[in-house]
Length: 367
Ligand code: GDP
Image 1 (cartoon, rainbow, N blue to C red):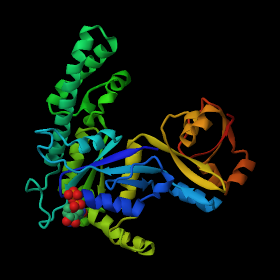
Image 2 (cartoon, rainbow, N blue to C red):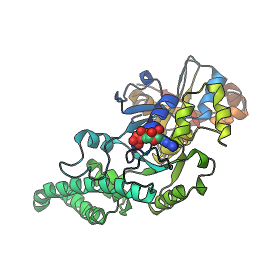
Image 3 (cartoon, helix red, strand yellow):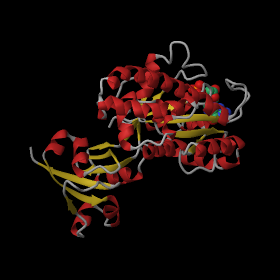
Image 4 (cartoon, rainbow, N blue to C red):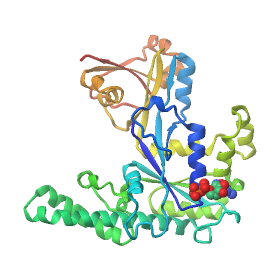
């Protein structure tokens, strides 16, 4: 697993409210994810997936393990955070390791909740955070370029290429634009991967809107402004109302639906945030399903069958023979795994097979 999303945002935008609601309502049992970090700022969050629930219902396994993503609450980003000694080490360590960033932006008006710059303005708020990340990246890139000088002089080809890429990135950063806006090919991105540039990570904006707007966010001027800003950056926004999400965590499951309906919602906003974050990371889900355990696994889109097997155990990848696959849809339309197999829906795939979202897989291996 090891998928991590970092939550950033100015103070008082509702970041802690959303992080707490996330971990309370979707928190996964940590013992199933031994590789995850144990840290109060890190929450392991289950990916809400009706297919997983349905498979569990059909099979009734002894153990159920959903797919999960780690969310990291990254505190400490304010205007000027990158000045002086630079961003704190703990902060940098956290944010550099995340795969994607969820940028929480305040779109709610509430005179009881002060705004750090005195007024709610999504476009300005985004720029403040972005600038801090850009400044941190500039420092990082300049440092690296300095260390490359000697190697480049010495004719080191790898260093030369890395230097070329960084010289392409630096002026863009200095122009206050994120590194992700530089047109880099795969080799170039790979060459500078070790720098873990903050502004090279994909960003999803989360608009924290007033409860009155949650069922029609497009009528909120703040939300419209945020959507525009997101569009300019080639990404998009998921609306949420931190207040509603916090209240939801206090309710019994049977009260949840009625409460959501009062606001014109069909599911908690967090469900969508988690799903979109997962998609943003470029991940899909495959399942393993037996009477002992039904489990959902993360895999990067485009991964081949042996790689998927390796997610479960390195032995399965090393000794991979074949994958026996029934798709989730075939299981549902045939009312069960056995009936689907009897109907000829079992496919046997080899090591060149690209795993599809919703594949239910049994791996044959030999070590
Ligand atoms: P953080 O500094 O970004 O972590 O912000 P917090 O989560 O601590 O929230 C700051 C204040 O805003 C708290 O008093 C929250 O109760 C309040 N708040 C959070 N979400 C909402 C919301 O959707 N609407 C309103 N009106 N207040 C909210």
